[in-house]
Length: 278
Image 1 (cartoon, helix red, strand yellow):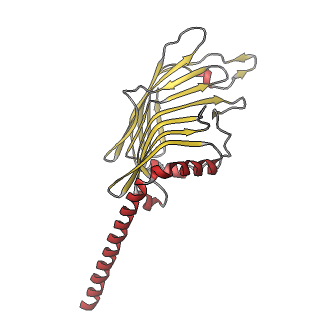
Image 2 (cartoon, helix red, strand yellow):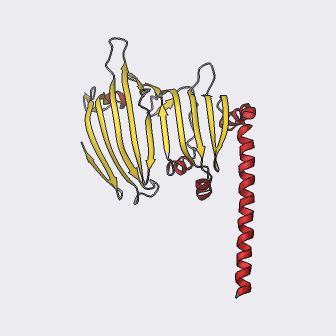
Image 3 (tube, one colour):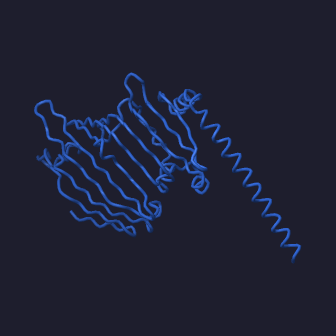
């Protein structure tokens, strides 16, 4: 028995030593790779362009290291042609979680900060919306990568948002206020949500007053497990013309030409049951 215990203890010591060596190598090589990102940023942009078939460019790429987790900062990330980008990101920073990535067996990002997102969405005659300047997708986008990260997100910040909506009937601009970004912040078992948006109808005839959409609340649990996931939201809307975002609605000889939406909505989700109060 003593001999068995001795073998087990010795095995644990060897295993711990190996883990420490591998961890040290991982951190050391990771720090070297992070510091060298700037020298290969053009190669990374070319790889992304070749794999997606869409032109991409990076103004600056920087890497750093926090404990076991690498952090990457991208400045002036352009999707599409540089002269008329389809999507422009002034700056995006994301932190990769080594521990959660090993658990999920796919890349997981726990902190994401986006600043200066600009793009234009165009309504299609056949229905749906598309980013101007990007080719139509084939529907094979792997959303699982997003779901894996979203389940572990600790902080998400989206500031200086500027999205133009060009519908078949009207044009709108959706933006965030510089002092009030969109945020998700995890605190213990709950994640607080704050999505303040300004929406303004663009009219060549007369100036229009901007309206606001405010979404605040919290969620808990893993949304991939609908039984454990809980959500509580309060949505406040200031007089949005809903008909501008809908396809033409007709009933016999009647046609929907106006539909204003405004007021407050309380939304609760628990145990796969929705409860909505408006």
